[in-house]
Amino acid sequence: MVTNKHKPLHVMATVKSAFSFNLLPRKNFYFLQDKCTLQLLMKWSMLGRLSAQAYSFDQTFFPYNCHDFTLSFFRDPCVLANLRKIEAGAWVQMNSEVVCVESEVVPCTKVSMEMFDPLFSSGIIRPSGHIVKCLHNTHSDYDLLRQMLQEEDSEEYRVIELGERREFLFCLFKHLTLGGELCQYEDTISPYLETTRTIYRDLVSVQKDPETKQISVVSTVINVSALDASGVCYPSRDREDQTFCYLIVDPFRRHVCVFYHCYGVGSFTL
Image (cartoon, one colour):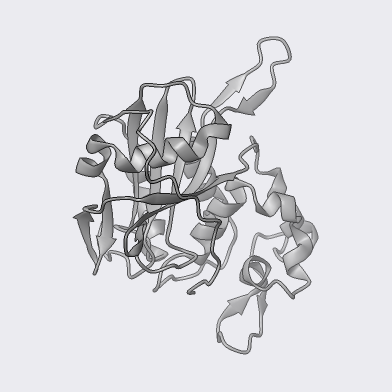
């Protein structure tokens, strides 16, 4: 699953940090404690390779300033002392001097799972919830769901519009569905949707308008990579679609969550 895609490179090596960060060690994430979710992550070869950490920060955050925020984050002493990544199958401290970052704001506006309804109406998912199988030149066990996620030339790929595919909710669903190196794929859609919903609710902050009663997302999601003098050092030296790091910023609480995964063979025990 190695990708050759490169985000725009933003170099700001001389900028002094405008933000400071503190670890929130008591922040618990439900999806990392829920036994059912953990069992599914183990089945999908993501257990032990997927993590979340929370930090507080001291300045007002604006989405247009996400690059400076990200660079400050990866240069902060508290972050450098607590941030971990996987190397050679083991969690290690990030001991790199970050010279620049790659950052991309990921749209995050969804407050329901309606964007996945076309999977049913298009025939990718049967009314029973079962995923329709299909033939593939490379994979002996393949289905229309993975074809929709990966095969840009397929009819199924266009079932979900491009704008919807950019949404963090869709990105999260895709990451979970494709899983890790020894992923055991599901026969039905429900485990993917329910786990996506659980993690999304855990990571993303919302607010209700007191007048209209409508709920909206207040979090800003940033897809990030950090680079040292040798190249990309976080989330991994190797570029891979299923290796990722998202910073999920709550501007009102002044909290940022680090949502991380490194592609590989997950743990086989809870």
